[in-house]
Amino acid sequence: MTSAPESMRDHWWWRPGWKVGRRMYTWHITFDGQAELHQLVHEYQARLAGLPGLDPIPEQWLHLTTQGLGFADEVPDEVVVQVVGKVRSRLADVPPVEVSVGPAIVDPEVVRLKVHPAAALVPIRTAIRDAIIEATGSVGESPDWNPHVSVAYSNVEGPLAEIAAVLAEELPPVQTAIKDVQLILLGRDEQCYTWDTKAVVPLTG
Image (cartoon, rainbow, N blue to C red; front, side):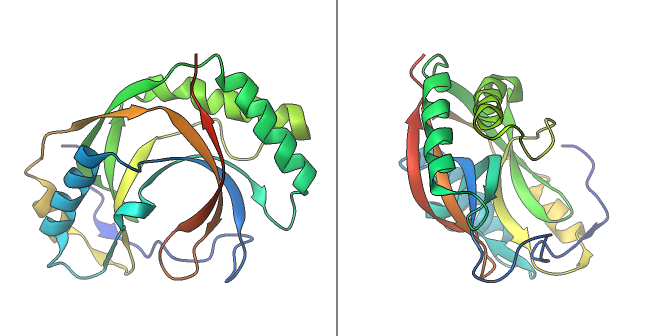
């Protein structure tokens, strides 16, 4: 296991542009029906359950953050339609991939599952970013990317020695098939990321 940072910080500070009620269009990979991954998350959450300051992520809201598009009040509907069409066209050449998810590690704001090989997911994100550039002329967020699946978010500032100790005994990773990506309308009003799915684009290469 990699060395952990010394302290946690609250994940739920309001990042630039965010406020209660505001929503963002973003591309995520989600995990409906991925029973083995759900079980792994539940096992880690059970280990963490006695520790204060963590918000476990409900099964239906597990996700792999991929690429933002923009706040809903700044992206016209016709641009959303164009981006979805261009993503669909580009991902028609990208095949489904299988990745290994786990073990869990702790970062300052989150307990997360490693996803590897990360390189297997890069063509998916590249296709999405290229589609956004083609439709809008630019793309936000860094090209650098660390794909992961979060298990629980920190809601306090403080030491994390107990969390690191719980995670020291690793659970075996699970194999997970990535067959599509979703354009979602994302909110974060109540210390949980929730969304409405606006489009599902399969990997059909």
